[in-house]
Length: 317
Image 1 (spheres, rainbow, N blue to C red):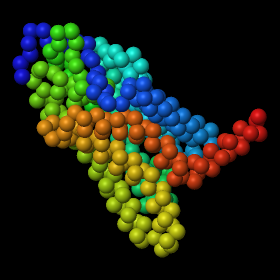
Image 2 (image 1 turned 180 degrees about the vertical axis):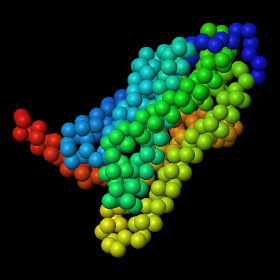
Image 3 (image 1 turned 30 degrees about the vertical axis):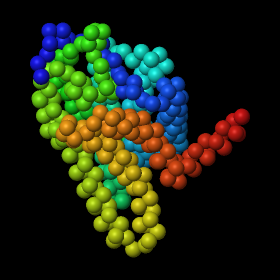
Image 4 (image 1 turned 45 degrees about the vertical axis):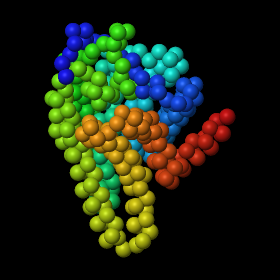
């Protein structure tokens, strides 16, 4: 595809993801407002619980607190802007703000997937080598692993932002570019561009694929060893306890990695824009919403910490 003379590197994007929705925008606004507020409440509560309760100062909860902070960032990058667009019915976004959203969404999203892989490593050490757990997964080691996740994520994001910057988009008669999505995501930006995007697609499949393969391999190998260890446990209660600590994590692994693979690692001809929208809602809105509840409702220590916090609140009042 060749670009017409009016193509621009910095157009105004019209985010038209919900323009064809049969549901009134007022109802969509209320729905996403509830999702966002619940996400804030759940993740902030989990962060405060882990920070205040000394019984939750283990490596697993240190990583979980980091994941909750990332989820807060991931939802805040996309949902407030979506709420503004639904409330005003004017979904315009200048190119600079669009690429800024793209950068932070990518950075938070990739860090999310990497931290979930580190949590699988944490469960492996806790179950397969419990005697050395506190030494191998110390607070300092966890902090370095989180810093490494952020470093890899930012470098990965800068690569893809750098490949998007030279692209051009053909403006409509109104002087804007229609983007069939509800935020500035990678695939919609590439689809809407009139420039040659083969290098971008290649980077997604090769560099992005390798980045996904590493965490996926770590998760698979960790849980393969965990499964072998559980089968060798002499007591059934020990096996059930070990499985219960991994169930919440495995739930979110399948949810997050499944939707990301659906959107980014299928050939463009194999998935539609509507399917991309549904999957994007799942990992931008539903995953940050579900994380604190999946990890807390299935975790006795977190529920006990929440009860202690409630009792302390009654005593203080």
